[in-house]
Amino acid sequence: MSGRYSGGFTLLEVVVALTIISIAFTTLLEMISFARKKYEESRETFRTMLILDGKLKEGNHEGIEVKRERVPDFPAIEEVTYSYGGLFFVRYEKR
Picture 1 (cartoon, rainbow, N blue to C red):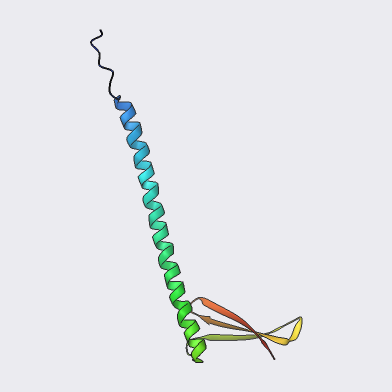
Picture 2: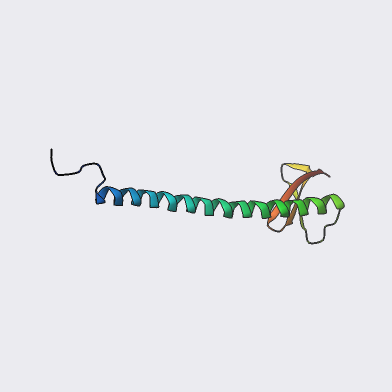
């Protein structure tokens, strides 16, 4: 029987394993941060959409930019764009 014990890991194997684990956790934390940022952006967009929708339903156009254009190929139809806070609705109306 040899005097050497072969039941453990070498230092190199441990360092490689720790490096892989640290890269995995770093990637995971970046993904969570990105997802949180996108969640906050979508939440703000939804909030702005609800405000714009509420104002349009109430007929309150205060703070809303309204742009009317004729549709070139269909002179009887008008395109109305309502803009508020970086968000817009487009509606087509018969003239």
